[in-house]
Image (cartoon, rainbow, N blue to C red; front, side, top):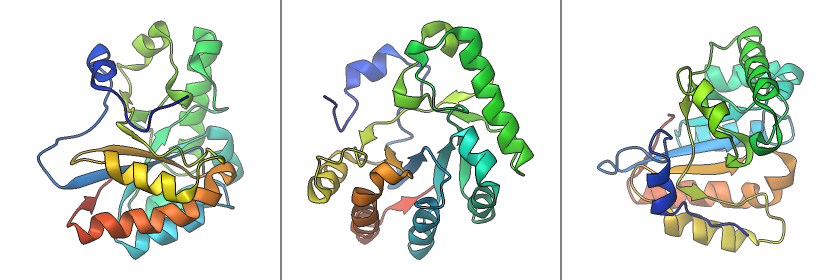
Length: 208
Protein backbone atom coordinates (compact mmCIF):
# COMPACT_ATOMS: atom_id res chain seq x y z
CA UNK A 1 0.00 0.00 0.00
CA UNK A 2 1.35 3.40 -0.94
CA UNK A 3 0.13 6.89 -1.69
CA UNK A 4 1.01 8.84 -4.81
CA UNK A 5 1.42 11.92 -2.63
CA UNK A 6 2.98 12.59 0.77
CA UNK A 7 0.30 13.72 3.26
CA UNK A 8 0.86 17.09 4.91
CA UNK A 9 1.05 15.65 8.46
CA UNK A 10 3.98 13.46 7.40
CA UNK A 11 5.77 16.48 5.98
CA UNK A 12 5.09 18.49 9.13
CA UNK A 13 6.39 15.64 11.31
CA UNK A 14 9.81 15.79 9.62
CA UNK A 15 10.48 19.48 9.02
CA UNK A 16 14.24 19.01 8.46
CA UNK A 17 13.58 16.89 5.39
CA UNK A 18 12.92 18.52 2.01
CA UNK A 19 9.53 17.50 0.60
CA UNK A 20 9.10 20.18 -2.05
CA UNK A 21 10.51 23.51 -3.16
CA UNK A 22 8.80 26.91 -3.32
CA UNK A 23 5.15 26.78 -4.37
CA UNK A 24 5.28 30.22 -5.97
CA UNK A 25 6.92 29.37 -9.30
CA UNK A 26 5.75 27.02 -12.06
CA UNK A 27 8.73 24.74 -11.57
CA UNK A 28 8.82 20.97 -11.15
CA UNK A 29 11.76 19.00 -9.77
CA UNK A 30 12.00 15.59 -11.39
CA UNK A 31 14.10 12.99 -9.61
CA UNK A 32 15.18 9.53 -10.74
CA UNK A 33 16.21 6.85 -8.27
CA UNK A 34 18.36 3.71 -8.55
CA UNK A 35 20.53 4.29 -11.65
CA UNK A 36 22.62 4.68 -13.56
CA UNK A 37 21.89 1.61 -15.69
CA UNK A 38 22.38 1.21 -19.44
CA UNK A 39 18.91 -0.24 -19.97
CA UNK A 40 17.07 2.88 -18.78
CA UNK A 41 19.16 5.95 -17.87
CA UNK A 42 20.23 6.86 -21.45
CA UNK A 43 16.56 6.80 -22.47
CA UNK A 44 15.73 9.18 -19.61
CA UNK A 45 18.56 11.52 -20.61
CA UNK A 46 17.36 11.54 -24.22
CA UNK A 47 13.79 12.41 -23.21
CA UNK A 48 14.92 15.14 -20.83
CA UNK A 49 17.03 16.67 -23.59
CA UNK A 50 14.03 16.75 -25.93
CA UNK A 51 12.15 18.92 -23.45
CA UNK A 52 15.14 21.00 -22.29
CA UNK A 53 14.47 19.61 -18.80
CA UNK A 54 16.95 19.25 -15.96
CA UNK A 55 16.59 16.61 -13.25
CA UNK A 56 18.31 15.08 -10.25
CA UNK A 57 19.55 11.49 -10.28
CA UNK A 58 19.81 9.72 -6.94
CA UNK A 59 22.44 7.15 -7.79
CA UNK A 60 23.22 3.78 -6.29
CA UNK A 61 26.98 3.67 -5.77
CA UNK A 62 27.41 0.16 -7.13
CA UNK A 63 25.71 1.21 -10.37
CA UNK A 64 28.01 4.22 -10.60
CA UNK A 65 30.95 1.85 -10.20
CA UNK A 66 29.68 -0.30 -13.06
CA UNK A 67 28.59 2.52 -15.38
CA UNK A 68 30.62 5.70 -14.72
CA UNK A 69 30.22 6.80 -18.34
CA UNK A 70 26.46 7.21 -17.85
CA UNK A 71 26.98 9.29 -14.73
CA UNK A 72 29.37 11.50 -16.68
CA UNK A 73 26.83 11.93 -19.45
CA UNK A 74 24.24 13.10 -16.93
CA UNK A 75 26.67 15.56 -15.38
CA UNK A 76 27.78 16.87 -18.77
CA UNK A 77 24.13 17.55 -19.63
CA UNK A 78 23.76 19.73 -16.53
CA UNK A 79 21.82 17.36 -14.32
CA UNK A 80 22.36 17.03 -10.58
CA UNK A 81 23.49 13.86 -8.81
CA UNK A 82 22.55 12.73 -5.32
CA UNK A 83 23.49 9.86 -3.02
CA UNK A 84 21.16 6.83 -2.74
CA UNK A 85 23.55 4.57 -0.77
CA UNK A 86 25.98 2.10 -2.34
CA UNK A 87 23.73 -0.96 -2.13
CA UNK A 88 20.21 0.52 -1.96
CA UNK A 89 19.96 -0.21 1.75
CA UNK A 90 16.74 0.09 3.70
CA UNK A 91 17.65 2.17 6.73
CA UNK A 92 15.03 0.59 8.96
CA UNK A 93 16.74 -2.79 8.52
CA UNK A 94 20.36 -1.62 8.74
CA UNK A 95 22.52 -0.62 11.69
CA UNK A 96 23.75 2.95 11.97
CA UNK A 97 27.46 2.31 11.34
CA UNK A 98 26.85 0.00 8.39
CA UNK A 99 24.41 2.49 6.88
CA UNK A 100 26.71 5.48 7.22
CA UNK A 101 29.61 3.53 5.72
CA UNK A 102 27.43 2.55 2.79
CA UNK A 103 26.45 6.17 2.21
CA UNK A 104 30.11 7.19 2.25
CA UNK A 105 30.95 4.43 -0.23
CA UNK A 106 28.41 5.90 -2.62
CA UNK A 107 29.87 9.39 -2.26
CA UNK A 108 33.37 8.03 -2.84
CA UNK A 109 32.23 6.21 -5.98
CA UNK A 110 30.56 9.32 -7.41
CA UNK A 111 33.72 11.33 -6.81
CA UNK A 112 35.88 8.57 -8.30
CA UNK A 113 33.70 8.54 -11.42
CA UNK A 114 34.26 12.24 -12.00
CA UNK A 115 31.52 13.89 -9.97
CA UNK A 116 31.81 16.14 -6.96
CA UNK A 117 30.81 15.17 -3.45
CA UNK A 118 27.01 15.15 -3.56
CA UNK A 119 25.20 17.42 -1.12
CA UNK A 120 21.88 15.64 -1.61
CA UNK A 121 20.79 12.33 -0.09
CA UNK A 122 17.65 10.27 -0.49
CA UNK A 123 17.15 7.16 1.65
CA UNK A 124 16.05 4.14 -0.39
CA UNK A 125 12.36 3.36 0.14
CA UNK A 126 12.15 6.61 2.09
CA UNK A 127 13.12 4.60 5.18
CA UNK A 128 15.75 5.91 7.56
CA UNK A 129 16.23 5.70 11.31
CA UNK A 130 16.40 8.80 13.46
CA UNK A 131 20.03 8.20 14.47
CA UNK A 132 21.05 7.66 10.83
CA UNK A 133 19.35 10.87 9.72
CA UNK A 134 20.85 12.83 12.61
CA UNK A 135 24.35 11.79 11.52
CA UNK A 136 23.73 12.61 7.85
CA UNK A 137 21.85 15.91 8.08
CA UNK A 138 24.93 18.04 8.83
CA UNK A 139 26.44 16.82 5.56
CA UNK A 140 23.49 16.27 3.20
CA UNK A 141 20.15 17.82 2.40
CA UNK A 142 17.63 15.02 2.97
CA UNK A 143 15.50 14.98 -0.17
CA UNK A 144 12.15 13.24 0.04
CA UNK A 145 9.15 13.93 -2.26
CA UNK A 146 5.56 15.05 -2.43
CA UNK A 147 4.68 13.07 -5.59
CA UNK A 148 5.39 9.36 -6.07
CA UNK A 149 4.82 8.13 -9.61
CA UNK A 150 4.93 4.44 -8.53
CA UNK A 151 6.32 3.64 -11.97
CA UNK A 152 7.96 0.55 -10.45
CA UNK A 153 4.56 -1.03 -9.72
CA UNK A 154 4.11 -3.46 -12.59
CA UNK A 155 0.47 -4.02 -11.63
CA UNK A 156 -0.19 -0.30 -12.25
CA UNK A 157 -1.04 0.65 -15.80
CA UNK A 158 0.90 3.41 -17.52
CA UNK A 159 -2.33 5.38 -17.89
CA UNK A 160 -2.99 5.25 -14.15
CA UNK A 161 0.62 6.11 -13.36
CA UNK A 162 0.46 9.14 -15.64
CA UNK A 163 -2.94 10.29 -14.41
CA UNK A 164 -2.01 10.14 -10.74
CA UNK A 165 1.40 11.74 -11.29
CA UNK A 166 -0.24 14.65 -13.08
CA UNK A 167 -3.04 14.93 -10.52
CA UNK A 168 -0.78 15.45 -7.52
CA UNK A 169 1.93 17.61 -9.10
CA UNK A 170 1.93 21.24 -7.96
CA UNK A 171 4.23 24.20 -8.22
CA UNK A 172 7.53 23.20 -6.61
CA UNK A 173 6.75 19.48 -6.47
CA UNK A 174 9.57 16.98 -6.08
CA UNK A 175 8.50 14.00 -8.19
CA UNK A 176 9.97 10.50 -7.95
CA UNK A 177 10.55 8.34 -11.01
CA UNK A 178 12.95 5.39 -11.24
CA UNK A 179 15.62 4.73 -13.85
CA UNK A 180 15.70 1.02 -13.22
CA UNK A 181 14.59 -1.92 -15.41
CA UNK A 182 11.62 -2.77 -13.20
CA UNK A 183 10.08 0.66 -13.81
CA UNK A 184 10.93 0.96 -17.49
CA UNK A 185 7.63 -0.43 -18.81
CA UNK A 186 5.69 2.43 -17.23
CA UNK A 187 8.44 5.04 -17.34
CA UNK A 188 8.98 4.72 -21.09
CA UNK A 189 5.34 5.58 -21.73
CA UNK A 190 4.71 8.02 -18.88
CA UNK A 191 7.77 10.27 -18.86
CA UNK A 192 7.43 11.83 -22.35
CA UNK A 193 3.71 12.43 -21.85
CA UNK A 194 4.20 13.87 -18.37
CA UNK A 195 6.85 16.27 -19.66
CA UNK A 196 4.69 17.27 -22.62
CA UNK A 197 1.66 17.90 -20.41
CA UNK A 198 3.43 20.28 -18.04
CA UNK A 199 5.48 21.91 -20.79
CA UNK A 200 2.19 22.81 -22.47
CA UNK A 201 1.09 24.41 -19.20
CA UNK A 202 4.22 26.57 -19.07
CA UNK A 203 6.17 24.69 -16.41
CA UNK A 204 9.96 24.48 -16.23
CA UNK A 205 11.87 21.42 -15.03
CA UNK A 206 14.93 22.10 -12.88
CA UNK A 207 17.41 20.09 -10.86
CA UNK A 208 17.53 20.42 -7.09
